[in-house]
Length: 334
Length: 205
Image (cartoon, rainbow over all chains, first blue to last red; front, side, top):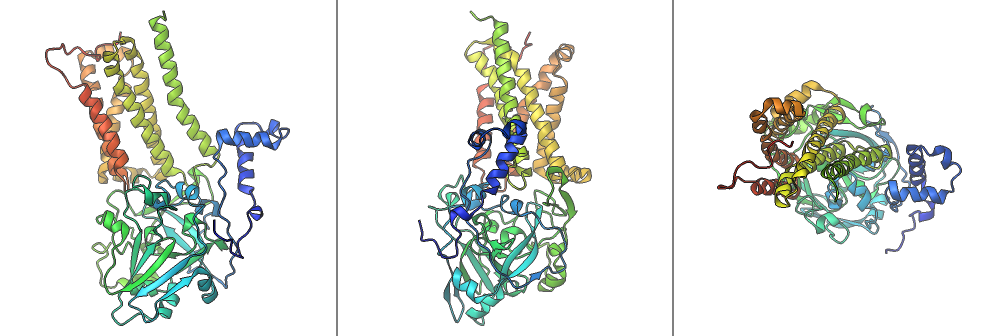
């Protein structure tokens, strides 16, 4: 156990609303509402053991303050918070979409430090607390388009990565930025067992060209929906690059390295014909195993009320970022 | 001494319950929102695995019947085969309904463009033919041709796991295990010379 930081909520303050709602649902599903009203809560909790999942202790999240909300012309309906935090790809905690929420709750996200190093005048080890003191947060409402052709709209809390990189003062030959996720097999079952972790070589690494990293749309995010990130969404600090497929937006970052060479990236190493270094959202370049021309938008409705919408070039951020790729054949540099 | 017809009845009942339970479980989990914010992939995968598992069962029947000399076991094979087909229908329906949201033109282009879906589709067409010819009346009418047609299940046993293999994003361990299981089941029933070829595939009357 770590010492609780001052800002953390105590466990009692975290409302067990989810559990309560779940119980109500079970009782309804079993057609027991009528009886349920007269049954002591303890008995209903017993039903949970049979029909529900064990109540995991959710990692506490605290409120973060932010200056303003930026939408960048995206006025889509937000994806509900409960869907954003229960549908994740984070193979360090298992390959099923529900695994990260189940297995990541005990991830120690405080204390946490993020090192920035490489071709820079001022390398530094940042604590998350220092980052929060130094860089004011903004709410950025971004589309998140997964390479698997589903998408969400997420209100991130974060700040431009450029601000952090500028502080480090990259050298003249700096061309690329490499990122690395925490490597800790004791905390991350997917790193301990190849079977759980989907056969990926850990730590997870990602990279951007320096001009992509310095682009004002590229942020380091520390929260969503007004609160700190849950572990399954990449707590305490992650990258968000809204015009690229989701796997570029690396989670739970411990290291940023400025370099002159194109860095290796995890999915590209695993299957280079399917996942390129650039990975810009592009409806005209299909994944070998599925079409990228449209996407399933995860909104507030149930299974059948989802919508399949056309995918936009650069995920709808073309006006802001297309110029970064002038003269490049995006079929070749997928 | 339990009568054969009771044994058959009991075996079939156990099979029906065993094959129905996962579907009931899945339905309850969906109703309770226990499968996360977007259970689409989970549902499709779960039902696909249901096809493979029931297919393993159908292919186990005749070797077991031979090995343990329990001929009456063969009379439950058709029921499992039809369960396998039921899982397949639900698997494809889920893909069309929840993932493609009834975009039929996308379905058609995906069947043509994506090798893993092409393979799955070929296997599905074979399964459809087997399901349609499953009534005993048709079986009797078709005679030897029925035998030949239903041997195509061996092709499904290869195509199914290949479809699984090609469909995963990473981590081929699990698909490899299934492919090996099916290979073993086929190896087990390889034709052995000298012995009459009238195996358990004969009419189950």
